[in-house]
Image 1 (cartoon, rainbow, N blue to C red):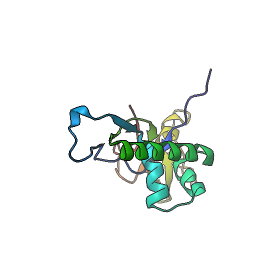
Image 2: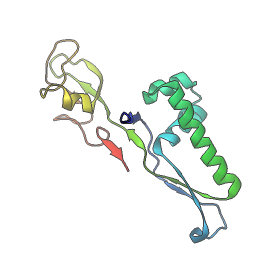
Image 3: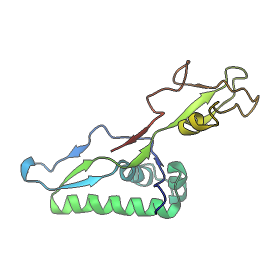
Length: 154
């Protein structure tokens, strides 16, 4: 049995998820479907101009996996441009679950994965400085936010 896919960390989820060539009727178009992590790979490499090691580190995947994701994305984009297909961004194995957290006791600040916080022995994570079990998301004062602290999958 294969191991489960590792979630890819993404910082950007596009709002415009469908791109159609001008002058072509939408009902006759074939689509190339890009996964959200593929768009993130293109953004990091081609727009942010990061090297592959930096990109892979940001997405918390291996360099080889990053290269494969990037190659798949570029192939789909090229095929859509050359063959006049529509591009649709949909699905994938990604999460935006890294929260910036702080300890109200000592005001230490760090990044925490939401899954780690929820799964840590039922009592949550601890502050790396003072050991307090009370940590808060910097996006909300009462608990972890729901804006970027949860997995998304299609």
